[in-house]
Length: 132
Image (cartoon, rainbow, N blue to C red; front, top):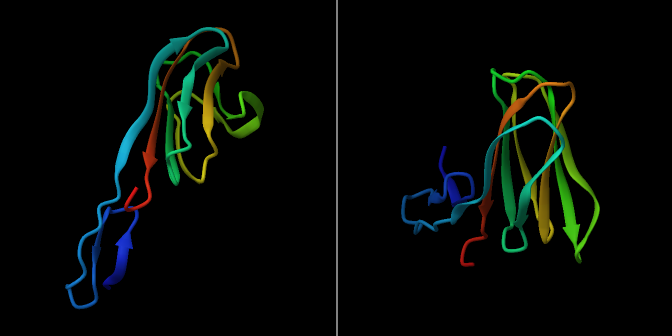
């Protein structure tokens, strides 16, 4: 089945007759952190105001001793009004989610739930609207 107009996920388009111009949708790594933690840790912050959508991938590696909580904290006007989302990941688990219009900034925090270390990966990709 052909789609008319841009395909956001694929970054291209294919018109019903094949005559639509491809419209690239820029995607870039906005944030990445690969760490082993033993206590609550601020992994960093990312400016999200230039993106129409973000995709988050969080992973707790098999070698981890503890479940880990990953928090995506909204930063608006210099403050932190609340969480965009929270994930509890057991060793070997991962989560991937997409968010529309993610505000102006996010802080990324991780906390092991039990004693021991947790090896985690957090990646955030930003998707800009076509033409931006």
